[in-house]
Amino acid sequence: MKPMVVAVASGKGGTGKTTVAVNLARVIAQNGDPVRYLDCDVEEPNGHIFLQPRIETTQPVNVMVPVLDPTKCNACGLCRDICEYGAIALMGRKLLIFPNLCRSCGGCVRVCPTGALPEGHRPVGVIETGSVDGIGFVHGRMNIGEAMAPTIIRRVKDHILPEGVSIIDAPPGTSCPVIQSVRGADFVLLVTEPTPFGLHDLTLAVEMLKELKLPFGVIVNRAGSGDDRVNTYCRDEGVEIIAEIPDDRRVAEAYSRGLLAVDAVPGYAEVFDELRSSILERCESQKPIGGTAGRA
Image 1 (cartoon, rainbow, N blue to C red):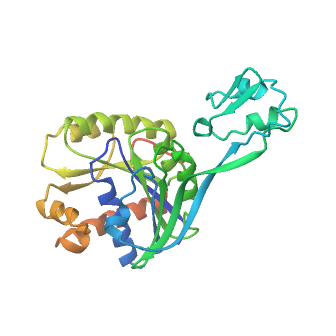
Image 2 (image 1 turned 90 degrees about the horizontal axis):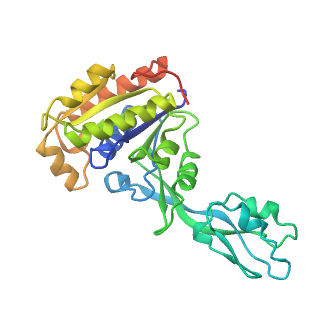
């Protein structure tokens, strides 16, 4: 089976993105295909609540930061001048480094004429890996107060399967961490809800994916609970709605108990198995799902 990367994203939080991702991973595993779930929502990963994997490894994620050797510093100010993030300041002849502002570009280390800024490291999070019932599991957890989500997301994506299906659970929104998560995906599932807020943020996510030239499709979660403006927008924009998941109290109750809909609610295994077949068929043919074509 060739490698397939499916990203599950949403323009806003609370639409059911993780619900779709973990249930899809379950039915793929039950079908006998290799599958790995990668939670790239590193600020608040929650896929483990539903999959309950056995964590087998924990690895720190470190980033480079300059470390001052005051015996070599001549206070030339070149390192301060090249830093666009204000991580280095020069107070008279005293150099100050603010590691939490550093973006690890290494520019200061390269321009220092005396070698006064050797490379050091500081931890920004961890990567945990494990497995459960035939599903490989990887998630990143960013340390509180950090702002280096893309760095951790890249480390999570290092675990994409060489063969089989990798399900990427992206952060909500359309910011840099989302772009880092979905980049390179064979296609993206955009999970939305039939509400004015859902429609507004869906339009932003659609424009993002068009800019990235990624194939995509829409899943309407809690269908029937709002209005039809999401459906109208998708029809007018030529965006395919792949599935509509009904507004079902039983699913919400299962979710509140940390259970998967495909395991706890009759009929949903078939719903997600149809979604699985549809997605894998498109991956095999590399057929664009939305109004876009090609891969980033």
